[in-house]
Length: 239
Image (cartoon, rainbow, N blue to C red):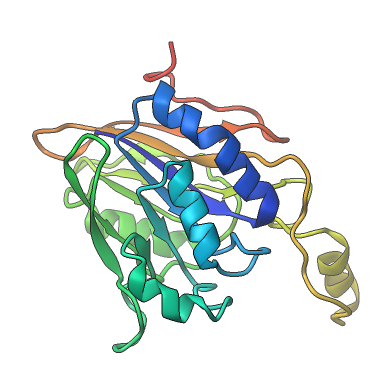
């Protein structure tokens, strides 16, 4: 199975990168499963139903959330009719929505996508990776909006990457216009809202190919397309 995970889509710039690039990636790389982190897609904070549908239309098979899951209050309602929208599984009992989804892939198979809100530090994410080693095809972290260079296949056969990075404008501070974060860092005083940067975005993520017999990973590579970051493509799919 060919899997693409797309890191945190930040604001309009990130959504534009997805809508312009993902359909061609699905076609050219013959992708079977695309999972997109969409918790920052609506102005950098949360997701709306219209954006959820926009990401699905671009080729996503599942969309994950995180600590910004409910920043757009409508998500508390529409998530119940959005079977491919997955909030963290370890939210309190009674939280709307689902923390895992069994989705049908583009090749007619099924894949279980689980979302957990756990790792703030890289060590925590690594711990989850080793805890799941041999029991998952891929464990990939999000949240820092900075791609890490530690993509690897663990000894038990699970593909792992500490952070897939963001799909957004990297001429920014984690996807936000630099001025307000810099002002807060230098003065300690907030003076306005964080606004997403609107420049040319880099689509960042990770590509994994699994063994159909075992479900474990055979190949892993980072993905970075467009924007300011150095490009990275999965050589095993790109001739």
